[in-house]
Amino acid sequence: MHVLCFGGDFVEVNGTLIWYYNICKREVWLMSRNIVPDQHNENIDLGKFLHENSFSRKKKEISFGSVKFDVILDTKDKLVIGETKKSSKYEAASKWQMMFYLKTLKDAGINAEGVMLYPEEKRRDEVLLDDTSIQTLNNMILDINSIIEKEEPPKAEKCKYCKNCGYLEYCYA
Ligand code: SF4
Image (cartoon, rainbow, N blue to C red; front, side, top):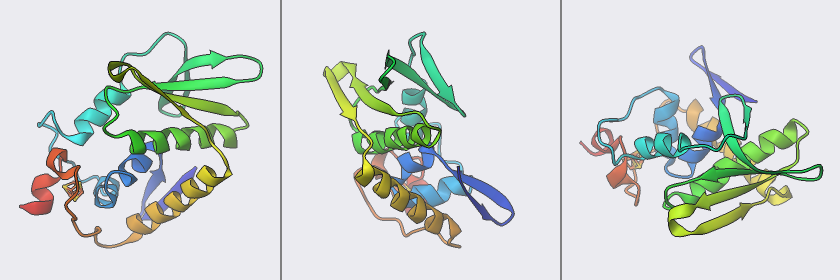
């Protein structure tokens, strides 16, 4: 578990923060401060994130903490966990979130592989954890910690995700 304390509150670096880190670092800071984005606009990233992460699941699931996955394949040699997504628009963020869960499983002594499923695009991408991705994840966790520790959020920088972001007004009003 990667826990950071600020102002007496504890923030756990979890899959959600890894997801946001790969969308916008300013969002990481805002989420860590419980600054609630505009959730009324159904096009916002958070709405999509919540929807995609509660997308209908098959019966066979694995769960740890608050996270649940479809089990695609579970043999003596191999566990493959899957996530179904509506679209690949956030594929890098989703891949690193999956990597984070694979690493969490690995830390618990369970070797697993991941697969991202995009049924509407007829796509299936394998996600494999290796030493390089573990190192990248460790660097992300360190960077998330340093973002959260700061008194001020990173400056708003226009990016392709801004137009669907719940913090749009907060950042640019
Ligand atoms: S509006 Fe843009 S800069 Fe502001 S938090 Fe959202 S993605 Fe980041």
